[in-house]
Length: 221
Image 1 (cartoon, helix red, strand yellow):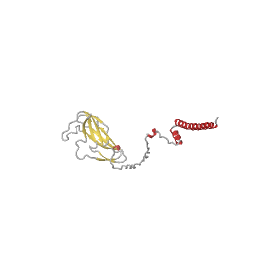
Image 2: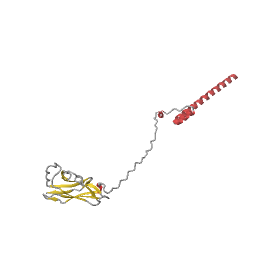
Image 3: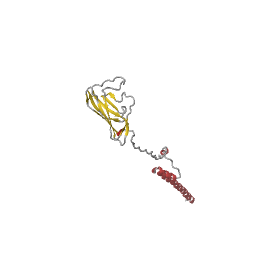
Image 4: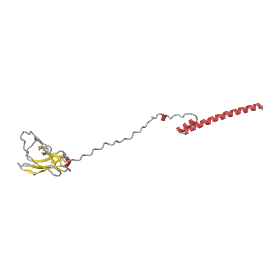
C-alpha cells in the first residue's frame, strides 16, 4: 500500500472524530438545559438561565397583578372629657323637686246623698333633707273630677286674679288643704250658670308638676 494513502486516511479519520466530539458536546449542553427547564420551577429556571448568561423571563401572571400599597391607620387617640361639675347641695328655701314630695288626696265619704257636697283632704309632704318651697295654688295643684272619659270639673277652671300660693314645706310636716265640690260642672262659659252634675260614679285626682295622687272613687245620689 502507498504510504501517502495511509497517512491521508488517518488524517481524514482524525478530522471527523474531532467534528463528532464537538457535535456530541453541543447536544449534551442542550439536553442539560432542556432537562433543567422542564424539571425546575420558575425560580430554578431563572437561576439556570442566569448561570447560562441569560436574563429570566418575567412570569406573565405576576406582571398583570396590581400593586397594593397598605398604609397603616393611625391609632385612635382618646381625649379625656371635661370633668362634670359637682351638683350643688340643696339649701333651705330652694324650690321643691318632685322626688322629694308625696302628694295624696282622701275623700270624706264614698256616697253623697242629694244636696251633700263631696269633700276631700289634700296633703303634700316634703320628704327631702331640707325645707323647700312650692306652689300649691289651684292651677299648680289641680284637683280634677271625671266620670268615665267625661271631664266634669277642675279647680283650675274659671280662676281669676292671683293664683300662685307659694308655701314653705318643712321636712315631714304635711301641707293640708280641704277641697269641696259644689256638684256643678266647669270648663265651659265661666260667666254662665254651670250645669249640675248628674247622679253616678266619679273619680277625683290631684295633680302637680311631676306629681299625681291615687284615684279617689265616690258616688253621687
